[in-house]
Image 1 (cartoon, rainbow, N blue to C red):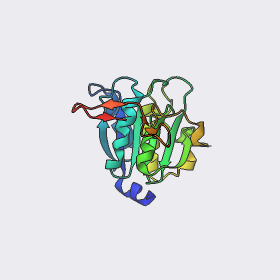
Image 2: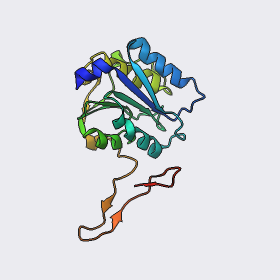
Image 3: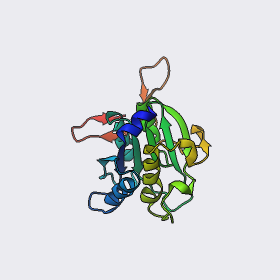
Image 4: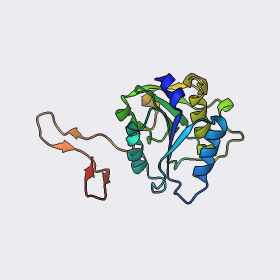
Length: 197
């Protein structure tokens, strides 16, 4: 799978930046500067500000994309001590973003988690790192370096899933084994009126 990642060089971007911002173009430029043959896909940039649920739902759709690096910047904790992380999935994708739960739901659609690391190695960052633009200085460079073949272990210490901030919503489940009741939270209603649990 890693050879496929290096061959295709796909990066997707999911943010709450909105389309009228230069931040998206700057992230494109950062990736292309470090990995000129990268192909960048703008998955979604119209997510409401800091809306982790909508961001996580959007990121779940990366299973429809080729194997690649998928950056998600929905980051109410930017400028704080929250961690930047990379999640390697069993399918072969890398999910890159803040440790705030937004990346975790997508792992279910990418065959689960293989490895998680915290991004701490400044060798793979744009320095100096801005306290408010980790998309440009931490996450985009991490994706570009992964596409160039840098091993995930080089980015920082390994983490366990239970050390991460939990996902912003739980999966639907049976209330009781003998019951037909389903315990769920409605996390999205699309424009056609379909409920997503």
